Image 1 (cartoon, helix red, strand yellow):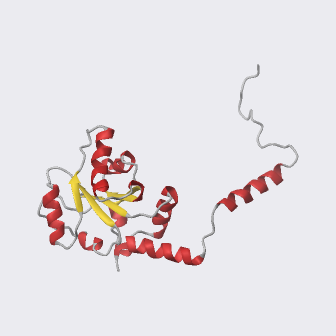
Image 2 (cartoon, helix red, strand yellow):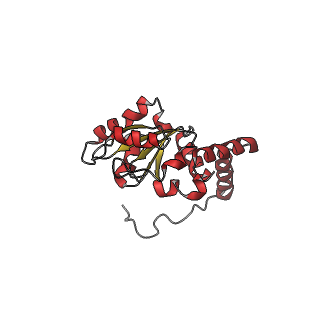
Image 3 (cartoon, helix red, strand yellow):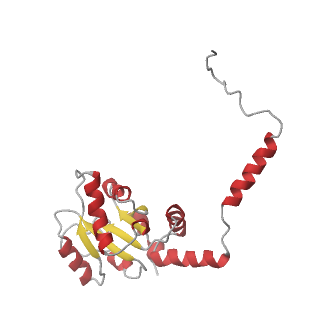
Length: 193
C-alpha cells in the first residue's frame, strides 16, 4: 500500500481526448442555462420593480425557488417600530408594493396594536406574535408559518425582510423563499416610485 503525499493525484488527466471532453462539458453546462426572450425579461424586471426589489435579488430568489415572490414577511424591527404606537417611517414605501405583506411582532409589542398603527398609516397587513429565539425549531416554524397560511400564501413564495440573525433563521425554519436585510430592501433607489 502506498502512502498519499502532496501532489498524489498527479494533476489533470493526460489521457487522450481530455481537451475535447472539457470543451463538450463546458458547452453542455452553458446550454443548461436558459436564455430568456427579451419580453419575458422585461416582464420580470417590471415585476421586480413592483415588488420593490433589485432585479438581481428577484431573479436569484425566483431561480432558487422556481416561483414568483408573492409576499413579504416583515419584522417590527425591519419596519423600525419598536413601541406600540410609534409610526413607521418605512410604511409609506410598502403602500405601492404589489405583494401580500405580513409581519411578526416581537414582545413587548402587541400584534393587534401594531396592525392598527399600520392601518392608520394606510397599510393593511396581517400580524402575529414573533417566535422567541429560545423556542424549538418546530415551534419557530409553526409561529412563522401561521400568519402566512392564514393569508393563504405559498411558503416558498414569501421573502423575509428583517434585521437580526434570529429573523434570518425564520426563513430556514419555515422553508420560505429567503431572507433580505431591511436596509437593502428599504434603500431609496429600490422603493422610489
